[in-house]
Image (cartoon, rainbow, N blue to C red; front, side, top):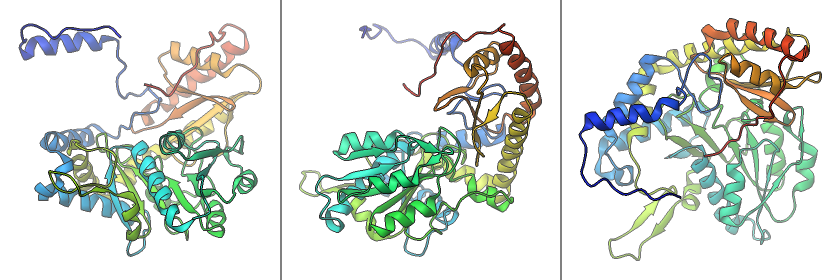
Amino acid sequence: MTHHELPKEGQGWQAIHAAMGEARQGDLPWYGERIFRGGSYFSAPDVVEVANKAYQEYINYNALFGGWFPSLARYEKEVVGIVLDLMAAPEGAIGSTTSGGTESILMAVKTARDWARDHLPKATAPEMVLPRAAHPAFDKAGHMMGIEVRRMATSVDYRVDLDAMADAIDHNTIMMVGSAPSYPYGISDPIAEITAMAAAHGLWMHVDACNGGCVFPFARKLGYQFPDYDFSVPAVTSISVDVHKLGYANKGVSILLFRDAALEAYQRYTLEDWPSGTYSTANITGSRSAGGIASAWAVMSYLGEEGYLKIVGTILEARDRVVSGIRAIDGLQVRGEPHAYILTFGSDDFDIFAVAEGMEARGWLSGHGLEPDSIHLFLNGAHAPAIQGYLADLATVVEQVKAGRIVSKGVRTAYTT
């Protein structure tokens, strides 16, 4: 990596701001009508304004020292309480904030590992069993914590292979996982079936609802149907929900929930033998800005149930229009029946990546899927007005690909930093 010297003399903000503007000339906008890539969770300008203002109010507060700031403790308690309610948590359930979905997953795995030492003594070489489409954060957790990951080799109709999952369980298994929904397909696993399997063996069951936790409760009120996924499913042990996704808080704030408050003892790390006193945290990070927690509380207060219902309804109506429009184009197939705001589609007749590149040349940016080759769309509040234009261009590009006028250059996307 190239070394850069610290400037000998400081510069004024005006010059710095101009330099930053020049530096980001090649950056994509973080959201837009034509940007369907993951990572953009736009709802409406007024919601962004509320989130940003609340974040700025607490950007310099250190959430590690939450006890010093009663207001921050209140926000965190209320945000966690709201998510517990959304996830149909029973009395005695508990939760905490993390910096994002990956940290929530890491802490769920850590908690399950430590719990298993007391409850699954035969598991001397702990393992966890994952669907093919489960988030890579589980593999990261396994790598960091010395837990073998048994990820299924295939998906069945874009959901978990239940038979293969059952065959993968042995005396070392401590944890099973389901997605609600998965990132690759936007389709939920059959959580009730996986959970029953886990319960039969006395295993920890985690539901990764990072993508659906702030959508499904409102979608169900609007009449949409999908598999049960929350604590209403008996024996679900833990759930992760990202509030900085479709909860519209600023990054990073995710929530990790446990069915029983007693499980928090396995989550927390505490060191008492230290010259400065007791050090005790329920997550991986130490110092972190309190801005995300403040923005989550502010946005939830601003939108209320009515606001979330309106936004979720708009996004899912746009999704339904996209799905219908894609299915009306000869040669395209939507992959399964998407449950939330993520969908993928492809073709058995022509190169779908040529279609993706043709759409990108027209300014429509999307992601890619590889099992099978697909275009990956990630819908948010910016997209509803653009659906008709997207489908019109898609039909045109498909005809050009069929005629051989657009050929893929072999470009693939990666989920990386």
